[in-house]
Image 1 (cartoon, rainbow, N blue to C red):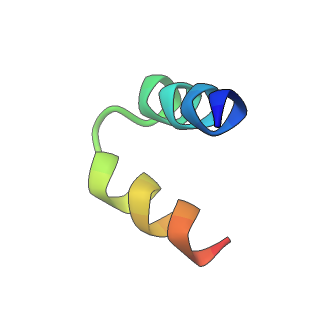
Image 2 (tube, rainbow, N blue to C red):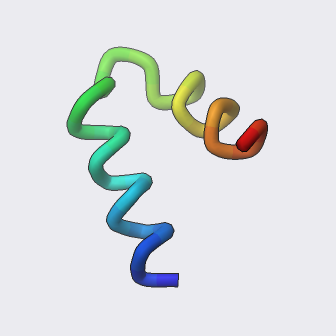
Image 3 (cartoon, rainbow, N blue to C red):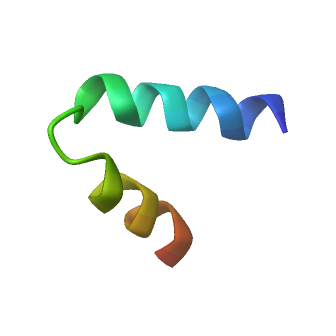
Length: 29
């Protein structure tokens, strides 16, 4: 669970312009 949170945080930091897209991408994977 911690890894998932870190991954999400990293995604938000890398792509803060489109957080919805990162969430969708995460669900796809």
